[in-house]
Image (cartoon, rainbow, N blue to C red; front, side):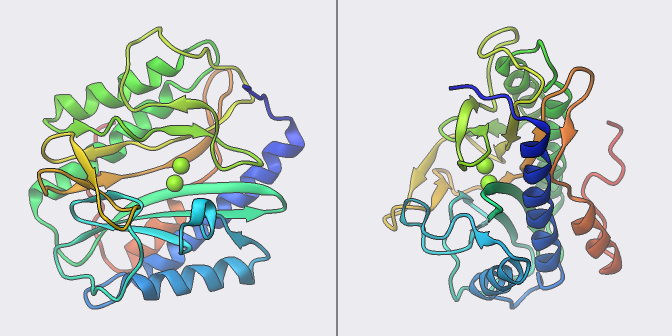
Length: 269
Ligand code: MG
Ligand code: MG
């Protein structure tokens, strides 16, 4: 069922998604060569519980942790471990919470130390494709318009789109209708209405689009072993312009104090 959220529900979703945004910013302070993804997971869980919420992913379909931490060729659903992040890695961190009965869900791909130019271009393009997707999340458009915008921008930049995993509606459940693929044709799919709350989350690969799943039953990685990036924001579809519920602003404030230059700093979008 496709559900239009009322004002009260939207405000609750805003709070839960803001908490995820702040949790990711808290992690940004700790992301550096040598840190383990399990340490990041503990920091996130404590931060979420200290703010009166529960981790949204822990126990979801049996997922063991608070964060999905996906390093380099891992696309999504990586399980935190004692692995040390190294200079030149990227780590995609996907975080969910439940606050007052409503889910928040947001993801960001962080650079660890200095990453190479090719990877920086992948991060920039993935971020830009998310923004282009959001620009299409307006009443009267269709889900295919979002997917087409993401796909066109990514593929025109020489990258490929993961198709097996998609964005989604969000509310009292983590995954609601509609599905929001990162590829598609203009004018196709579910028609968007004001009040739909959706997560757009491009997963873009440096090499080919094909993926495989690890024997752990969770980790999705690129088949060719090349790097993948993932950014996700939650938003409310509106008439003129989407109301974006989660934000990367807090993360970027932290990165600024660490003197990190954002890959899309000079983006002309
Ligand atoms: Mg997510
Ligand atoms: Mg999601």
